[in-house]
Picture 1 (cartoon, rainbow, N blue to C red):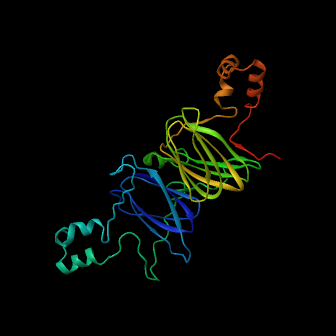
Picture 2: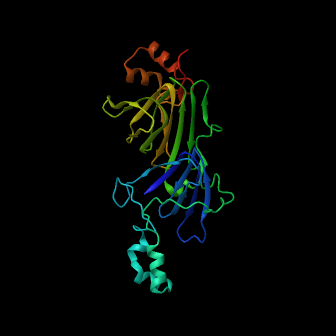
Picture 3: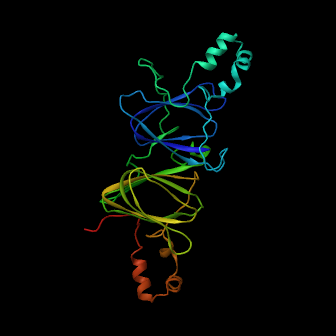
Length: 301
């Protein structure tokens, strides 16, 4: 199971231990931070504040123990690995007597989420982890920005090399009110999983039969999937919309269906005329409308 965890609300301290690593790495993540988590990594997540924290987990479960389902392997507690080995094995493994092993195995009666007593102090964040183990995907600096329309920020292997271990990548889209995300698809066959983190709008996903595969209203908290080679486009409502998307590849190949990088602009005039069955004048008009980059379309004034 490969996942990218996204800070949605609040601030959280995170501990990560990779297999056979002698020490944990501690992160302090906030809203907008994206944390790739590789197979086999042991982690803990602690909200030490007075307000709620929400972590969004999106990932690929094709190779999970039960395909299509998130399966968590817990180390401690009533559902943990130690509990499964029971006290007789634990005492022999660690050289403990019966009372000591029972204390290790049975003291934690929590299962997945536990409420801690006040006063427990967790480690401070490790140094030099930003942009190595995680990064903020909602930061507009370095994003593709369209005046009056919004911006798109990509999280790819080039920016965060750790994504190569996870085999995933991500995108954050913020559309201003009534702006449109131009239609696009992923040419390498990656699947898109998108979550509406704020606002509302409309989505249209088109497949191989020339008909919408999905045409729906989107609200905050909604989740939708764009299958292989399907194209998608969306329009924000008056309030705008924010989307967090994960792709099932660390090196996705994005293809636009509008603008100067689209297939329409690349085709020869006669090829486009024949494909659309239009006159040369219409072909020239259509191609002229694709002479510039079109990723986000601002609302009409």
